[in-house]
Image 1 (spheres, rainbow over the protein chains, first blue to last red):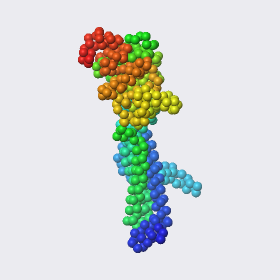
Image 2 (cartoon, rainbow over the protein chains, first blue to last red):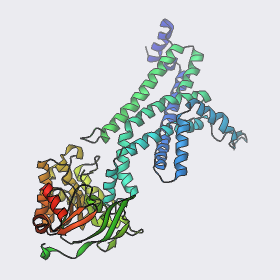
Image 3 (cartoon, each protein chain N blue to C red):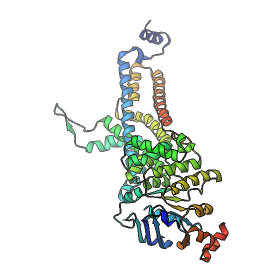
Image 4 (cartoon, one colour):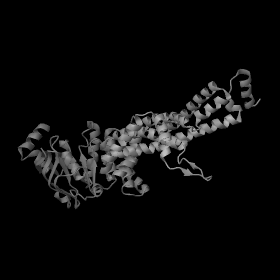
Length: 247
Length: 249
């Protein structure tokens, strides 16, 4: 008996319907959903880290205007529900943008659901990353930066070779928490019809009528996805460990 | 003073005043340090000793006067601070090593990053410097794995790697226990004997007396008295110097 037959039998004999294993159509939808979740997670993580770094840099800068703008951004995105942010971008901002004309001559939105999900998730997680990196930078003793400057480092060199590597290590555990949260938050993209894991699973269970099974599959998939991320980050943390310190 | 071993003036300080807000920390400071000279600055806490070192290294700007380091005016708004800092090394009380790098990397980083020297050549020099401070077997250790005295000697090697003309020592043994203190003092003594120009802010009176060519006594932001250690420690001219030494000796 092949695996496919085994799972068909599981359904026929016991009513446990794991259609994503034996049904090629459901399987493909599920795999695509998983890959979309992966894409949303990885791209949003990368962008949110860039946003966090730029924001933390601006907060430490001299321009009052930029500092104020950054603080406003952080407060706005940290203190409103991410689902509303996403809906706001998709339904309130998107219609005001000029459309693009496709090869068939139709006007389509310049940024689609996937694009808005990435933008929205990146800004949400990025706002939290600004705070995470800022507190990391503040935790680097000024004497350490001064030691670098006394050795002739420029401010930028001191930042790159001394302050940032230390701040990053200090920030790492808070950053990981936020990134795990971001992976889980990608499910919100369901609300604007992005075919990620939750969306694909919902499509499967409403046709194959296997809600309970798909719920368990989804939970297990997220558990494994986040376990994978945590596993990688544990290795990074080990590699960056500074012997003889708590960090 | 062993005038025979002293060279040309390398640091010339004239009429320096330094304020923090309304508080004057240094006033009318004059000091000349010659190549190869060992200068010790002593005095009560809060008398501005450490601030003076920070001014020489352009870590703290001065409000009045002039500091010439090897002919470069430190009190110049257009000053290239890096140019001064490459001539003047500083070793801090709290070592301030980079905790994410090994002892060897700590010594190598600045020459490679700042002076853009060839890492292989720098590594050979860094290993020689670690040997000089008797830490060749700790090259791969991280600062967190070293004792205070070992960290301080790495900090001295790190400073030496930049080939400075002068090294400033800011109470470098103040945070150390008596045993490790000795290791660091031995290292500084050797440096001074090798002809390195050294300015030390210190509370180690016996050590100052032994290695200094010139001792400056500061109190309340002014230089009260200066001279060879024989004068300062045995025949102080100023009653404030005498009162201070009576307290600490």
